[in-house]
Image 1 (cartoon, rainbow, N blue to C red):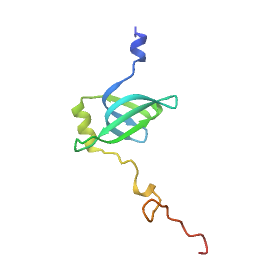
Image 2 (image 1 turned 180 degrees about the vertical axis):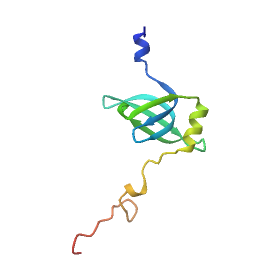
Image 3 (image 1 turned 135 degrees about the vertical axis):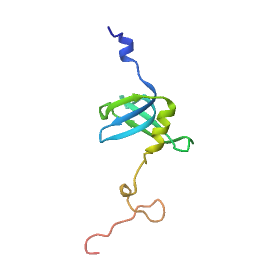
Image 4 (image 1 turned 30 degrees about the vertical axis):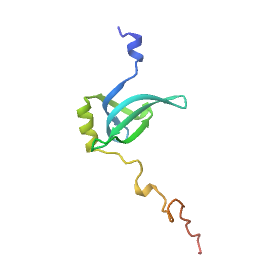
Length: 108
């Protein structure tokens, strides 16, 4: 019989997450609450060992596998697949640093 306390305990530790969209990440995982909802937080270590390259939060519904592993295994896995926070094609072109470029209207 499963102890209720054991069944409701939160996981925290090094792991490999497998997410919808065939995405896999390695890093330090823990549960986090945001706006009253539970999320899975992963801190992905930088390949050079200097801090984290990304911290990401996922809805538990996006997760289909969590594999607890040693720190060494998680770091090696993370080094092979470093996530980027945004990609170039997601950003609007800019001019003068922070100002967003205005696109010409039809007929201009």
